[in-house]
Image 1 (cartoon, rainbow, N blue to C red):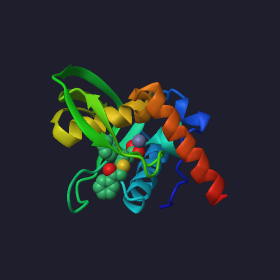
Image 2: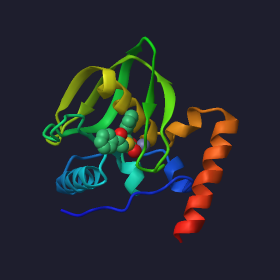
Image 3: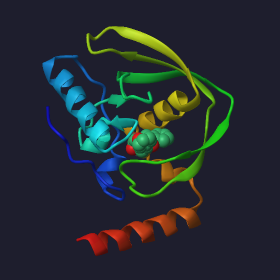
Image 4: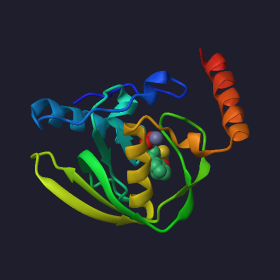
Length: 167
Ligand code: K1U
Ligand code: ZN
């Protein structure tokens, strides 16, 4: 397995819309394993392929306390969404920034598993939020883009200043 470098906002590659996975093969299973290792090491509770500069529709997540429940979603599709909720989100591509975002409260998602078999999940709470956040990455959207223009420009300034200091 390998740790993959994570793209950081405002890298324009984060705005790429990922293409569907055509065949769930050995290469995709290796990518999912590498993404899981990268997510656990970060540490994070989710990671989309876009964030590691692979523009295929694949995401991994694990919201369990003991990091024992890895879930892999290939070609995820939101079939339905209901309700509304607000909660604080972070992002491995926007380090150090935590902001409140409005999301659907419940989502029904269909995807393929690592055997290429379709499955459906009805999610609420953190799983629903995390799925929406990761599917947004696959569509080229980063969570801070839901914020006001003023907040977004302040965050951009903070990230640019931080990048200048750490180079
Ligand atoms: O997509 C990502 O960048 C991963 C992101 C997922 C996420 C977090 C919170 C709400 C929605 C989506 C993260 O994992 S940020 C880090 C984080 O939340 C965390 C890190 C360590 C322990 C617990 C949480
Ligand atoms: Zn993110």
